[in-house]
Image (cartoon, rainbow, N blue to C red; front, side, top):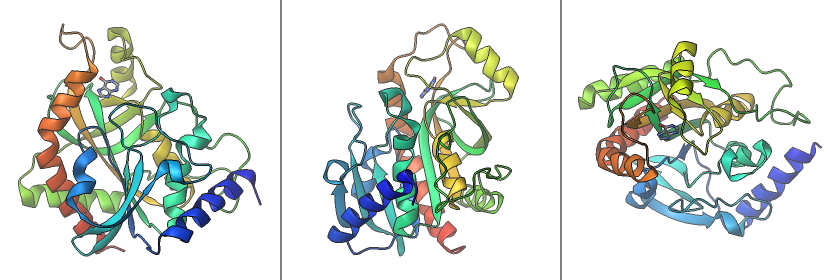
Length: 276
Ligand code: HPA
């Protein structure tokens, strides 16, 4: 058994000892969506710190726990707080929760985040369906391959599942929620980018920039989870306006957009579950 797999298996046993629940969809909550989990029908919760070997996030305002419950009739596991590479964790730690959710039984992974708008057509407060990604952080698959989870050289031609994306698109249309679409680029952070870096990532084809998500999507594809992702454009990226960027601004816009974002997430989960 690979060491990576062995470690996650221990986390899984820890979960199974406490909770009898098989989720169908895993949801990762980004900035602004943190309290989404409190609005669902909660069956149980599990603090990250109570799972042996589980990386615990250090970012202020990020709650660290899994919430298990129902969105409509759909069984979900929600990550209230994620682990970021910029906190100093190894990539293996950053994606451990994703792999764990797969081993809990999830088939679809729904990723959300706050991101800076790189595309000039975007505005702060927009929602963006992630169509594809560029991962400028190290691949989470570097190192010994956990063969139990996936192959050494996995395909990445459909990271954000085409069929599931169409469902989210249709859901947004039905709810009359405007939805941008574009490529997400993950940089390591934690500093925001320079104006030159934003020009660079625009040239590379990115529409939005952030510090999470892409590595999680790679690990998810590797282990056979189907992925969808939505970014809240919490600010226009550096250099587009003259205003310096602050975490407070990012948080404020994400909070303001949250009601619409939550509605889209809820209705998308219900629609996506029909594909299970
Ligand atoms: N850059 C990187 N990450 C972010 C940003 C940004 O402008 N906004 C929210 N997360």
